Image 1: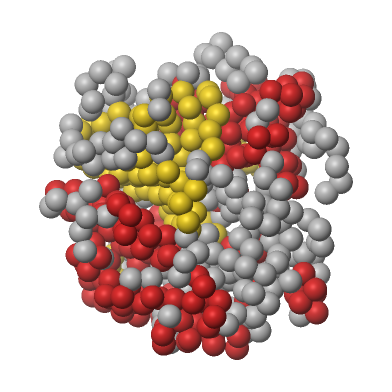
Image 2: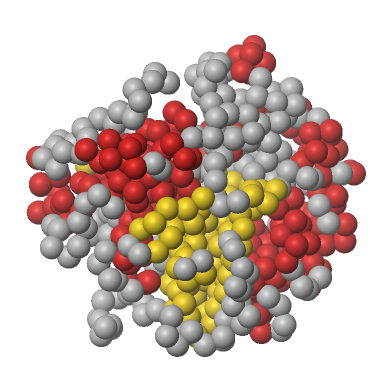
Length: 530
């Protein structure tokens, strides 16, 4: 395929030994440094995510959650669930007594579950890392303590969230120096995050979930009205667990996702529905967007009604991916008009970073770390420098709902790493950022790759659309003709002023073994290899 060098897009880099792709250049560089100095895929991923927790603070942080898919060379894919749990005292009744009614607001202390990311990092490192944590975290600590340059996309998103951040005095003091968001190219630092990384490097997960750091975090959240205790944080040390992934076939491959409580099941359901249609090159742009929209609405309707922590709710994976359910849902799609989604059995019932690595030994990791909304809950503990995520806002306050908040329960999660496999072997770690968009984004990216034969970078750079909450969001690149046709079918269009999500992927060429990487041009990052 000949690349159009006048397209203002970037060509996909190719490497022979190892590669890393992230949404921030400093994170990519930190991971590449690990790969160049004897580290493996896990070392590189942890180095990169630690940097990104410093240099992209509105998207991720050590006060967030994490999921990963790890594929050792020649071995089966393993799923890592690093989502945190609600406090032991959290119940629907307790939150209603606290004055909450229908939803848990983003900035409420009740939106903060005990962060699971550090538990996941340490379990991943213990299981598969090769270098010591102090060496892995060295770049992140340096940026945290000495400062880092703010990148253009980070600056844009930072400014867009400035008013929200100003609502928490501690967060405003750190993230709005001189009363405003930093501009692109300005220096910013988070020295207390550097101190936390030093503690974790020295003590492991105990450095975060036990001792003075845990006591201060719990006390700060209680002072805000939260239900958190030191015991909740102590239990958080062991929150991360290895699980079996789930998968579904598409285009001659197996698409592998983490199981619930993540929304990877929704991505697989979209793909299963789309597999009932011909999405080849002859399909019009409007038809393609319409099909994705209708399949997405059906899958997300089921996600919101049924997906939850399988330890405390029914696991519906096998049912939703069955032929009977998929056929019934696909039959509900009308190519001539947009329809409201309906559950298969008729019962009544956001911001992130993603990175992937393949090392010289062929080990692959698909890794995602998130604080959910931009700047998470915006609640920052001034004693520890930890900015808490807002993942608990996903819980429902409806007694009996599968995703109702409950003691020590994990909420439904939007963050989902992906892995494409063939004949049991990983051929491409991939992921899409963008909060709610991620499951739809997985399906759209893979459809471009497998149905249209696009390259990795081309598939992720294609104009995006997302049907959510009664609106069909589209990027400006969607043609005027397609817009007219979609509106005629009843879609309510909303042209987005900022890009929809981001993505990274690394694909292994089956013949040469070479690695081709992609990093979304909607972000600041890049893919680099050796």
